[in-house]
Image (cartoon, rainbow, N blue to C red):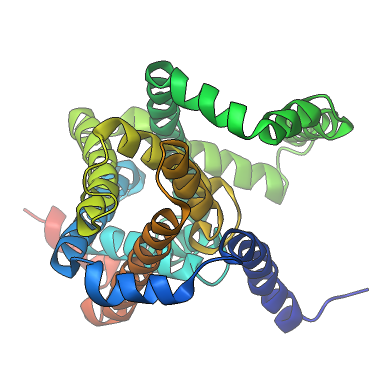
Length: 343
């Protein structure tokens, strides 16, 4: 039975909201909202909180600059894409993600294709490389955190044995075999299509995707790429860390605790819900309470900081989306390329 496109779009928005909302409700169902209101009205140092938000914007600006380096080799006319376009599409993707999780990545490729006349599949290939680099960085951060904080994880699993039991049960369940089978089946299908249907649309898309992913091999300024990657993650950490100083309950937390909370909360992007709702809160609250903080201030911090960061990133992205047609009103890719390649 066919599903109405409008109904399908609504479900893509509502279902992640319900999942995130249920997780959020589970965490906050016994919260003292009057105490949280008291924290909002008299305890938060808002200039410090706003200062921390600037690091989130800095990281996303660096992400736009890094994506420009990946996209530049794909321009067949020799002219690089407009920097302002790569930056604005990256900023705007976070706002689009607030509607349907992960849709922002598709949107920014579609939007940049429209502005710069670069095939969507190639742009999506660069996006995969962009995300793989971030996964690698997050993996390195997590390995460092686990190696330096074994006491924390031992204490956490001692206090919450049900979490470890659930992980072990999943690893030995049929679902793990299903995931492995799906992964191997997907690889086999791709190889079959490339070999036996080389002229098909899917095979063509996969080749374009590969071409975009391999743009990193022709990418100029690789040192700049690594520097921007480092700045992105340093900025994300500062985004979280300086927010601690906006609250009396968290301003004296050691750097190691901040690092653990940051690393675990960063993994919330894996959960397909808007802005990591629920998962982000759970990671922060679990870290703080394991180190002895009372539940209420941990909940207050997670609720206020996550809300502030979500509103901030959404606002910055909305401004970028509205700015794109304005800054490109006289921009034509072919004319721009001619003007910059004519001696």
